[in-house]
Length: 448
Image 1 (spheres, rainbow, N blue to C red):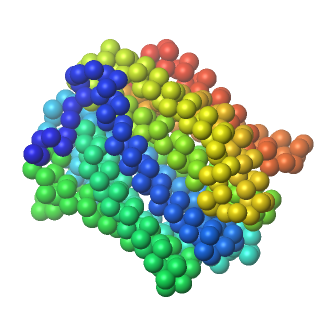
Image 2: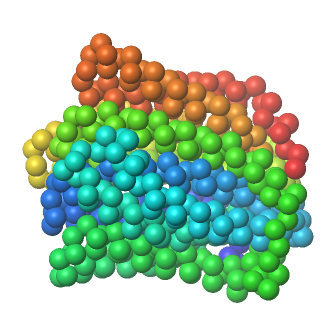
Image 3: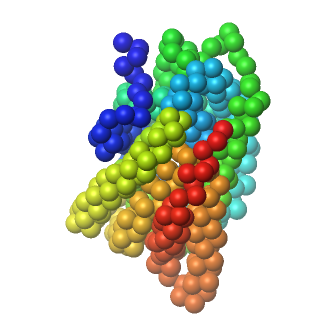
């Protein structure tokens, strides 16, 4: 029974392997996105637009501090998938042990940093005074449970690296149901306000972390995490850092740019904050297939690079790109047709809806270019070349985006300038990364 939970993708029909592996990832991302979305729906309908703005203002900050570690976990996943594909059980075991230890230590540090500096960061990004208290409360409670978020993501990343994308989905289903039930109970029945929303998320995240750790501890496979034989392997750690640090820096810097973007949105008032925050939730659902395919192709590439099947890697990249483009085109059409109706779930306020629909109309046309960037970046990272996607995304999604907003806002101070910063930067990054992929030099970065 145990052996059916992991899978090598070095053989079989390529598009089918990628699609079957991606579906649980997509469903898992769907349930993960439900965490904050249900929070927003409950907050917007039962607490008010100011509280909704407070939750929306917290998201870029959460992404900033968590993003760096998530890049490190990406490096661990690439390394583990390579060892799994090469059937190197000894180094696979060492990689799992080292990854969990580093995650735990990092999570403890991030908990204290997040709680301590929350008021300062919220003030720095220009959070309005009328939502400041709720924003601080929500964010500090969230950071109290950040270790659970990190352990779940690292643990599920390990399972995905060995071809198991189903059990992380099951755990997210369970935790999402818990989150929804507790949201409704704490807010509607106990009248706990934004405190209840934050506590519901914390409890649900903790459950998912416990479940994934239970699997890693109980399994008999080579990716088992042993509490009795804790060992931090320094050569393995160096490889994890080498592969993960560029992605971590990329995530942190891009998230930092999004904090700056959020500060520009904040300048248009709490209605703009609430409306844009609502669309960001919808945006999270819309781009989930892209992120799922990107995660799948990273694992696929890592395993096949480990097995030295380089032609299969290239075919996998083409198949995954076409799958992603087909799905995101369909989603974009649905958003244009029905997006305004979906946004009413979050708020009935006309001004809030105005900003949400405005953002939708500007961002959706850029999703095709975002898809190209993410899929090719997943291939290149899976091949062990993590620095190049970092340079491209930091250059386009951070430096270019900020220069565009600062320069264009001084000429035409309208919120559409902020929205265009996303679309234009996605177009630019897709052009650059496609040109790099075509050169094929990333295939030479396959040594560990």
